[in-house]
Amino acid sequence: MYRTIFLKARLITLFFFCLLWLGACTGQRKEPEEKQKRIEKKIGVLLISHGSHSETWRNTLFELENNVRDRILEKGKVSGTKSAFMEYTEPSIATRLKEFDQEGYSDVIIVPVLLTVSSHSFDDIPTIIGLKENPESIEMLKLENIERYTPQANVHIAPLLDFNEILQKNMLRRARQLSKNPEDEGLVLIGYGSEPYEKEWAELFNKAAEHVEEHTGIDEYTVGWCGHIVRYAPDSTTTAIKRILEKKNTAIVIPALVALDENFQVRIIGGGIEKIKDHKTRVRYKPDAILPDPEVEQWVVDITRQYSNNIFNEKAN
Amino acid sequence: MRKSSGESLRKINNILHRDLGYFFAALIIAYSLSGIALNHVDDWNPDFIISKEEIKLNESYQKNDITPDLIKDFSAKVGENGYRLYDFPSSRQVKIYYKDATLMVNLQNGEALYEKISRRPLFYQVNVLHRNSVAWWKWISDVFAITLIIMTITGILMLRGSKGLSGRGKWLIAAGFVPPLIAIVIQQL
Image 1 (cartoon, chains in turn cyan, orange):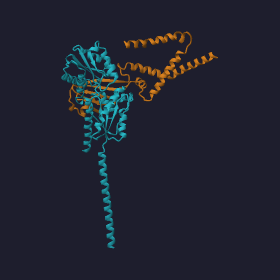
Image 2: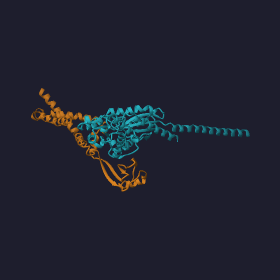
Image 3: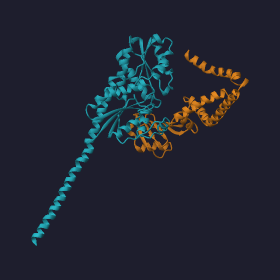
């Protein structure tokens, strides 16, 4: 009788131990899975630029990605890089973000290859990726058939190129290439411009021009625009050059545009120069662009490293 | 026999011109309206009516002063009860977003610009077609362009005699070349 009761008690105890052990095992298995999920960060880098009908322009941006890819990937924190254009041509931002989602990326670092604040950087791109709903951007994007897409991956937007002294160094290098006799020369910087942020653009260009003055001995400068702010007309270029030629013998004209687009560097700026009477002798101009520039490349590498480190640190915390 | 085959060809020509004209009448008018609107894109916004209202806040602010309550106060001044989001394009500006409007406040001088956007009736719709805002529309647009060429040729061949191509027609066609030629020559100078 007692033996049977003892046997039953032992069996029941054994059964409970088994249950406890199984429970413990299951719990142990669950914890690393959750941890693993948190650790499994897959970070991508998306270089976003304005976009252009010019193939030369687009190739320059693809080249930028090619030149930085290995350096971005070498630390192992970033798993892939892509380029996207905001308008005109594929690959669009939506296309690329969908690809990142399909490839299972958890985080995408967006690097806008744009000079400084504009409606594109401040409103259009955030609206495209679902971070904002700017009414004007929404309507324009719809009209221009630009797809909006809110990615599943977390999006981190890096600062614009005006974040450090890239433009100043770039302008100095290019001014030096064209300069022969600094005392006789004045500098003319031509940029895209932005109506709502004209002050910010002017400040950026003034700083860059002052940097050139400081390091070359050129002591006069003017700024002109070639973008939507002047309705893509060459007149602003002509006016800026004329103002310099009133004081100096030669004008050094530098297009402060991200990449070479024949419509801007040749038709608009070149057209503005041709309106100057003695332009062949008094204007020095090379239809080039900010890119290619090793400093810009290094900046892209540095900023993506900084952001990818932050993403990993956030996760570790 | 030859005369009757010529007659039937002319009949086909006229039918083609007439029926294509009927079919594409709406599109011709839509594209013409949109063409006029887009020709003057530098002088007006053919797609949207953007109403702008400047207001003065009579105070200057620092970026750090900006709180959700202050944003609500700014919004109330332009008749907005709530807001969707606010963001700082620069240290001197804050932009507040509403459903179909925005308010850009210059923190330094307290000046603010309230912009409300709405679609320009009729022009927005015809511009959607002219701009190929619907991706597949470009193929319809190509067909339409080819049809315009056909309609022009069939129109030229429609009449005979002194009012046809061999009469006044050839002179008017030649005259039609003059304005574009003048423009091209001037551009080349």
